[in-house]
Image (cartoon, rainbow, N blue to C red; front, side, top):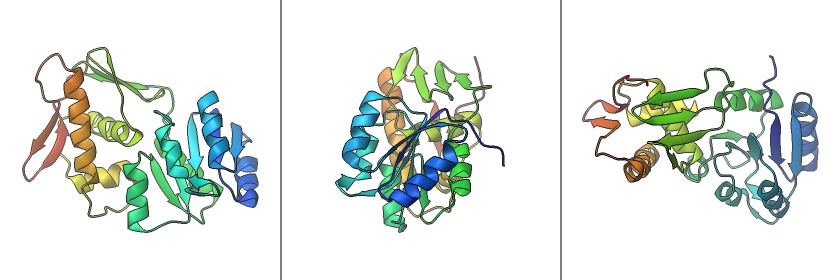
Length: 225
């Protein structure tokens, strides 16, 4: 498998053996920074920018989920021993881009990363005044910045890439997170937040994310600008 060059990766893992294994693997083609505590990770992410964060949840000085509040639009992939449906849902609700349950090989982790970080070619989607930069993972609506969580960005990107086609909440969950659907209201909550943020930045009352009973959700028409 060809390694994807992420440029900069922050690995937050308190298990020194696993941390060293991950650093050795990913540093072959990337710049890697590693932290073993929540405190050091928070200090690091406040000072440096990263293309992706690989994050353990159980850290000696607190929950790794607190880092998601400071990660901004940087994709965070959780790597955790906690694998129950509740733990996974908590991670996604906190804004994680993906959730990998330990034990997992570096090769599998890299494959999951590649689903979240797209190459910089064709890295922009534009439609109805809404512009997504897939490389920088930023969103502009009518030239106003949308402050989206990683999960909101991934859902919006998926719907825009499939404009005009309806998907149920279960289908969106499985397509975006590449894992079996959990009976949850997570997708509805993310879509509700997306609509509120887009409405706040809108110059009109146009609804870009459509809902149709029995069919699900869709990004309106395919009218790229």
